[in-house]
Image 1 (cartoon, rainbow, N blue to C red):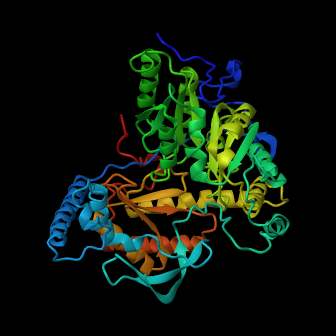
Image 2 (cartoon, one colour; image 1 turned 120 degrees about the vertical axis):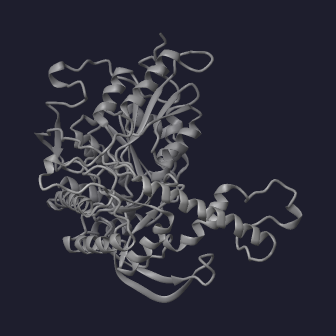
Length: 554
């Protein structure tokens, strides 16, 4: 049997600890009985692991699935008919096309993606890229626009739709704000350092405020070291190639974000995809990888890296972290955890899924997260062992070639983290964490009672509401905007072609009155356009109510 080595040396310094954990302190599934966690920045209590709760993935009713396929079929047929009309000159085509002298070349624009955009997406294009003209807080203002050519182009009317309830931004803890009192330190840092650094960290852009941020992030997460980057997407796509390469194996969840997928592809490592949150599928691949080794040569893999997310941004589901940690230890693999949507948003004190499940963050080899969501700023971080971070400082393209983070952005992140930890002398941060959890549970429970199909975990502030049919996507978004509620609707290729949805992002800044208005509008609209597809209704005895009717892979 071919096994991977415990100490690997390919493109990185990830390494396993040889120390054995005592049986009295560790359980088989990864929970820790005597694990201390920080409360407001201090390790003064024991954290009890929370019950994960099942993710809700209610099966699509058969008639809805049939109607959805029929709807796409009809739209595609009309699309081919309209392409024929454009080809013979009976309809004007606004899409980019090859010049006449290039007609004999291989076409640049005539693939299915372009067909979809030209004939399907263009019909509902007015529901995306709406221009915002205010702070994207719990409410915002939208510049009104209209189209005179069926969404090919838009023009502004000069009017503004004011006080639209924002249910689409990732402003989980409400730190995207313009309160003068809260932003005093950001203004002071701007006066001292300016806005731009105009250099990389390796040259003349390494400011003291950057070091302070990284030290604070490491303390907040409870790990040895951390490193900050100026762009969240690049934190994944540019650091993964520095950790794995040819001869390494990446096991990636099928619903991972594009940044993780791009980073895996750029690394040159072999990529295999396991079913979403399915431990049987993951363990089967781990066994096969260890027993068979690399293709053709059957040599042991230099590294096996499991890549998962804390909260999946389109499904709202939580990672099965304790089970994955158990498999990681059993098969001597490494774990890369993307906490872009979970850091700050889950856990009793906002420290992400590691705190939510009561596991030691040091058991995760690579902790990744972004500052663009819960912290109301920009950028991302990689955290873990000091050897890992030191290696990335000299080998990551994001660290070596990217311009250092803007000082006001850095201070905004520091301000938000200090507020969450309570080191600013207030309990505002913890109040926001608790308020987010309360708002999330309230919105999810009410939507289920109304009969909507929603995906995800009960603790996830990402709430996908399934619309399915292509015609209902545009109708839903336009009708909600008329009610002064801004929502994000998502379809192919961001989701499977038959699982179009609206995605709500709950914020601690949402008041109960705002959520009640949203729920009332959803209740009315759900009846009007017939999107209450759920066959479940809440019981008066919640302990008897099962929110799922099937497993993704039983």
